[in-house]
Amino acid sequence: MQSRYEFLYNGGKVDSKREFATRVSRSFKKNFDPELVADLKFQYIETHDFFFYSLYAQYYLIKKHFKTSSLSTMSDGAEGSEVYLIRLNIERYLESIYTWGRFELTLFANCLFLFSDEYIRFQYREAIVYMRQFVDSSNYSTDLLKFLINGTQLSFDRNCMENFAIFMKELKKVAKIYANTKASLVVKIFETLHKCRKGEQSQKDLTALKQTLQFLGENTWLTYVLEASDRF
Image (cartoon, rainbow, N blue to C red; front, side):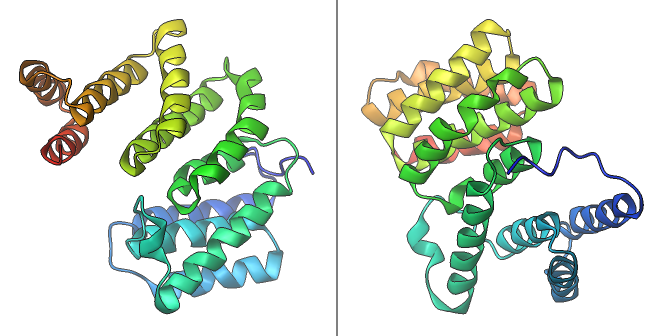
């Protein structure tokens, strides 16, 4: 099956999808909304359009605080069962798409923490590598970079060196070939943290990285580096 989503919609579907996407986006800043969850599920059941299920899944996972690198923390109780079902449904959908588009790549990148290291490697080799033909498209390049960054961070957090090596290699290519400053920054962050984990990083270089992130206003990354380096 070819990808059904390229963010190009026609007729009334445009308004409906945009309306729900906007509603979900705004709801991230508020308390968990059961009514929104019910509406998204209803739209999916009525239309059989996986777009609505993807919105539900991402909203539920983030608002229920399941965004963690450890799969074991997502397996207990009713909420754990729902997360398990979400993972199965996303896997089935992704595996039904022969050639991934932006929708599939974004969905996988946003929900990467759901999947095992082995599954991530499998999809990377089977699906993601074939998307390099879109590298000259600014939209696809942005989406692919987000996936690589998420994959690098998740692999580092899980201490999965096989996946970490794969993602770092690709990030370095993007940084070098396309002179991408964001990719270069993330490469520097994880090169430094990886050395810290192995006990090979000097305090001087770590301090310099923290100061650089502070100067650039990269507060999210600064917090991550501070928390990660304190664990080593």
